[in-house]
Image (cartoon, rainbow, N blue to C red; front, top):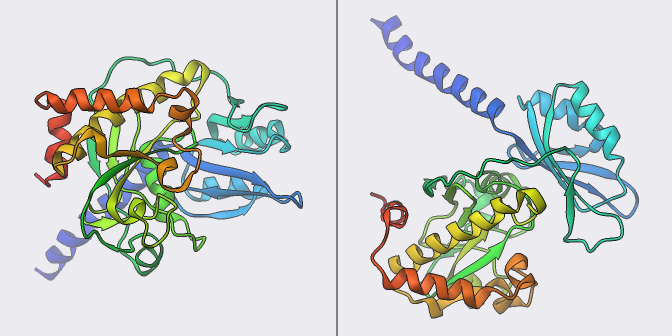
Length: 309
């Protein structure tokens, strides 16, 4: 009987471990690559929080069970051909390697890893609740306290090419003693909830008492560095952000007039893709049009997720 009880508990745990390992292997690692003023090259892996010298990245990815990686960097001075070759020698397939073009503005990037995804078939927006861990570090730097009231919804761009789940992992794993968190990341397929709706975040840059942080829900629109052949991924992410923003306004009984940009709170040039084309008022108008109608099937799924049903 005792052995049966052990089997009952141990086998499901082993299966969960196997599933987790399989999920890790199937999903690309999101990796930030950097070079500081002293020429030191380093990496940060969103999913594990691992950091180190760039030369050690291939071994670290293998050790963590990754077989694919998306890379994003703001430096054009790294030897990317050498890096991609080292990753390939370790069996790591790089799907994206976004770097700035030499002589271009810092926001303009190109993908050195080859052709971008071509799939454009419309997929319905899904709601995913994947709250960051309620541990002592996150409580100190990412889960500051309860909302007194939610009065606004604030729109951001991630300034990265990564997915909503990858952006969620970055928030959960970063250990740089910086107070950074937001409630949702949305990409071309999913709206991922990261913080509880009764806890405010650190996303607006207006301090511990600023209304951006303490009275607004933060939405990060992902894929904002997907340009050129991959531009459709950002455009669809923004369309999905309209659905999410509408659902949140409806949930909190707010109006489209209560939408804000990150720039409204702290002056930061964010959401940069929307600001580049001066499109925030058209974004607001489309959300208002949605609010005036009954929720469609995608918004109903979001509303159901927000209410915990």
